[in-house]
Length: 155
Image 1 (cartoon, rainbow, N blue to C red):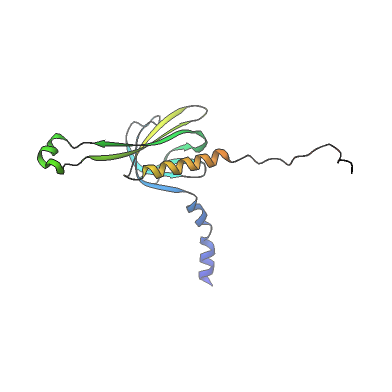
Image 2: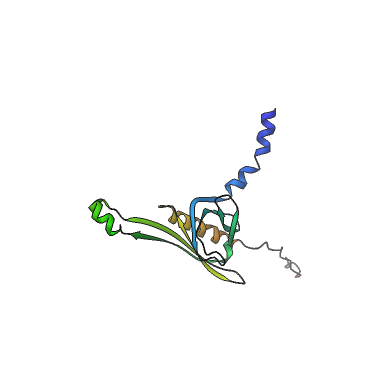
């Protein structure tokens, strides 16, 4: 009987956890007002916003989904340094870095925020944020039932 009660008590946590996408190994690079330093953390995509959270789980800032005007990813390829090329020759490989850029507007400001993400994840992050923003913008407001004052048509 205790197991049943325990499981029923945990059921409400399932939808809350599933409603949020979490991307770890994200580094804030630039673009948010008042934040001049790079910071490592996580990106979460919720029902209303994209949130950057530091490594301790403390929210740093939010980007409202309805305000997102543009989102894209970028891959930078950095060649190995001259010293590495001379030392290792053809074994000195290049280094890829992936970034996610989010532009958004609120009634008071506009910003473009840049995040460095784990290699191979930028395309998926962009797609999920676009989907969440599209879903948020498309949701129609609750419509009031239509009423008419016209008499019914004659039969």
